Length: 120
Image (cartoon, rainbow, N blue to C red; front, side, top):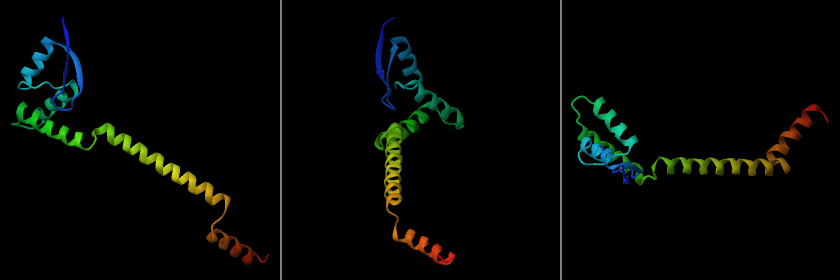
């Protein structure tokens, strides 16, 4: 059995499969090759919507994948979120180390007010 690389027409994921398997997938999805994840999503969508055929589900899923690709895809959004979390944590750490070494005027007033109220 000879193995060949094929790319998903929805998400672009490349897989290595036998020619027989590739032919079966293409026959089921109207001549399109879909990776395992996309094919499961399409099958689910086709089964979920009464009266929806596989071709409609493929078109709907391809539209979703195009939208995700333009926005950087799920992995891109996760990476962007991680960068934002690191920036936020870094800014908090920087501001807390600065404020602990030299109190702000507001913190001074609070301490003075406490001292005056105690009568020191």
